[in-house]
Length: 358
Image (cartoon, rainbow, N blue to C red; front, side, top):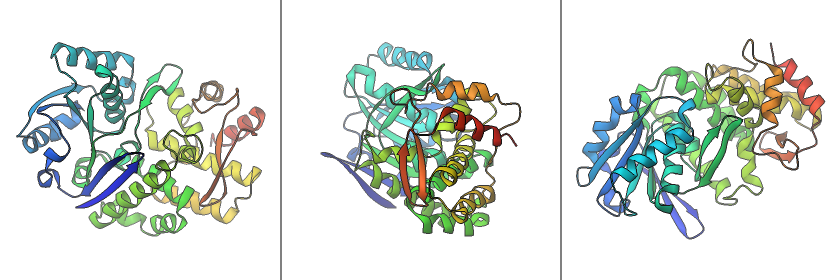
């Protein structure tokens, strides 16, 4: 079991990484009092809730199960979680455990930050996307009808427990979706890692355990390296949004149905790379490496059929990263060298989006 310390200001969040590690952890190091509530969804509850409860036998454990899906990451579900916690009369000694993917992590994190103005939190991510990205960095949030993650806060957990054995039951489509965030780290900060991903795509897609541990460990270190320099996204943390400006707009346009987060982000990354060729210094060789790696990992590079370009443009207008009415895009000078710009005109954006329909 690997232990990476994520040092942020006066805190140090332990990130524990390994395969089948739940019973190897001394939870007394991370849970200060006896009351624990596990928040999860129906699918994960059926697979792992009993297993996690057994690992927490020294605590008084309750659970709250929500329906599966991004469309439930909203204020209504948050209210239901708050109502549950209030009805149970929990106090500030409570620890909430987020057991699930990105939706569960975002919801549980926001609930823990807003219930009684803050209770303890532990992440146990069960999807690749959550293990390599959303569980690390302290972002929480819920969606609004006008866009994704428009309401939220920053809340760091007491610990992040990444058990790669959970990935054995993850549907292949979800696993591949998570690889988009892995590719992102290679694109924005680690070209040798991107080349390694491209070279080893077949082994990765076959769930090679050694490769999975490398993917998770490298991704965690890359994200920690960026976030500890810029916790509240004032500058370089924004580079982690590479591909997300268009990606989030695609998700919102589809109402979070028929496309997974990683699929939308992979399209957004190719889009941002294409703009970088046109408006910056990204070479065709680097562009080809990006698109080849994404395709070799069975991720999409063009817009879904029958998606409305006008709706995508409308959702871009509500992007939370906008400043003074202008969209901010993360672009590339080269693989590993990013920059932020708001100098991409709406007409050019629309023209580029149209090229991604096919």
